Image (cartoon, rainbow, N blue to C red; front, side, top):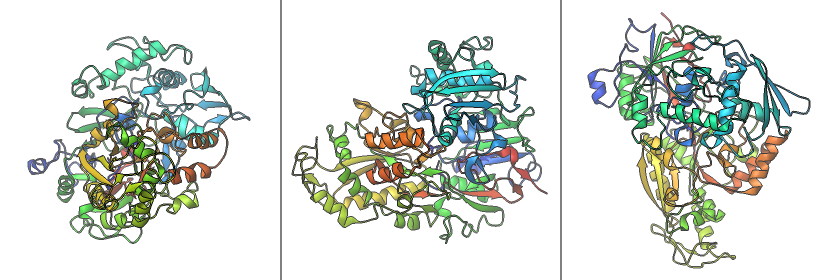
Amino acid sequence: MKDRGGYAVGVRAVLAAAVLAAGALAAGCGSGSGGSAASASAIRTTVTYAEQPQDPPTYIFPFMDLSRSSIANAEQFQYLMYRPLYWFGQGGAPVLDPARSLAAPPTYSADDSVVTIDLNPYKWSNGETVTAEDVLFWMNMLHAQRANWAAYAPGSIPDDVQGVTIDSPTQLTMTLTAPVNTNWFTSDELSQITPMPSAWDVVGIGAAPDSGGCATAAYGTHDAACTNVFTFLSKQAGYDPTDPLAADTAQSTYATNPLWGVVDGPWKLTHFDAGGNVTFAANPTYSGPVKATIKTFREVPFTSEAAEFDALVGGKVDVGYLPPADVPGPTGDARKAGPNNPELAASYSLDPLYTWAVNYFPYNFNSSGNNGTAGRIFDQLYVRQAMQSLVDQKRLIQKFYKGYAVGTYGPVPIQPSNSYASTEVQGNPYPYDPGKAVALLKSHGWTVVPGGSSTCTAAGSGAGQCGDGIPAGTKLDLRLQYGSGDSATARVMAAEKSSWASAGIDVTLSSASFDTVLADAQPCTGGTSCSWQMANWGKGWLFSPDYYPTGEPIFQAGAGSNSGSYSDPINDANIAATIQTQAPLTQYENYLAAQLPVVWQPNNASSLTETAKGLSGTTPQNPFWSINPEAWRFSG
């Protein structure tokens, strides 16, 4: 998901809050109700958690396309109610956590072509048991609606699952089309599954469970029935292409719609509004290993970083984040907290979170912008090399993130520390080099105009020419939309615009909300929908629920989250090798780092998390930015 710019990054924000006083509301915080971090009467039963500015949860159905796939929707909203089959993130490491999973670790046949899953004893809140049929329900819906699933990539789940057999209410077996890399299949394929209750297998409110015919059908045999169920559930969640007001109407019913009240997670939704105010109550029937002592968990919205900082200063939230503008000084170690803001130090503890993510923004290789030339310009590797050579990641990290960031130089994260990132990806194949950028453009037929617009004066596809599809007279005038709400992202974009201009690459910037940018940056094949050129939602990609960083959801040709429609058969073959065999990621990641399918950006701390002193259990933070408020405890 993507969540995945600013300190509170996340393709997919953290936090919850009690009622803020009228003064805080005027400063830009959404309304709520309850106590505060400073209120002794509520401190032991209520936790307040601050959402990222302008990035509230907006969608409840845990089956989403790219436009709805975000951390705010998945890891910090849906997962509290509807647990994925396998839970990842343990002790701050990007690994499987068997204790919090709905199933035991899977077992594979000797040839790695058959996988067996045994469910742990979990219950739905309506008293029914979480069964193998609930897993089959998800698989059948995915088979019918793979195009509406953000993590889908051609050839991956469900394409690589030949059959699903229910062995017993607590066991099922998947027969695969070919042997697989078992680490990949567990971490990237089975990880996508969220079991769904029989109460959702309907096409109308009040209908009998399983009357939709999707959960009970043999795998892949009833796509039409599953499509009808998907359409009904999507409309109940607010996704209806025929009704522009569907989302607002549906969101007002999230807490009362009986469908969404059937949960297997530790929390039940009691309030939700379109402004982003969310309230949960502890689920008394939760079967998991950690039971909540907190009775109420709230997430509250903010329109600006300044409003959230004011709420922290006023003790109005228990968990929030420190905006970059309020960081008092640089950290000497990106992984550790530097000095806390003096206005917060007495009441809060600071802890930087680096999520299992790579930060980038895509080129649209199918862009129809600039009379059809934008996509052809992006097709040229030398153009991408010139643009990347003008991104001074070291300077951006120090100037705008005050040291709380690490470089992104390829498709595999380098933080948290891991064994996957190659030496090349941990280095920087394209260090900041303005002279190289200018030389690349000049040697390929461009007349470079620093501070203006470079012009193609040697059209053609031969040596020393601009490239196929770029006529003489084409100017390097490009457009980039970025996500608002995060001041660091805005400053980074302004700095990069200035840097690109030094080589005559004239980039016009515009801003919009995170949801708008993400919705606009969709894979496309032509027409007006392909007019976008570059889009920076500010959050790159969080490897969740694709935890093993093979890249098929974002860089494989035709993948649902391959926003820019990047296509390279060598890259696809490299990805296939990491999926089908136990081959390491090295060949894949080194090739893609050199090919620059996107603009790599510094991967800043996703959250400089501030936690009220006396509240324990919040650290170590989950590297996938999932939250477990059921484990949070107040002392005293």
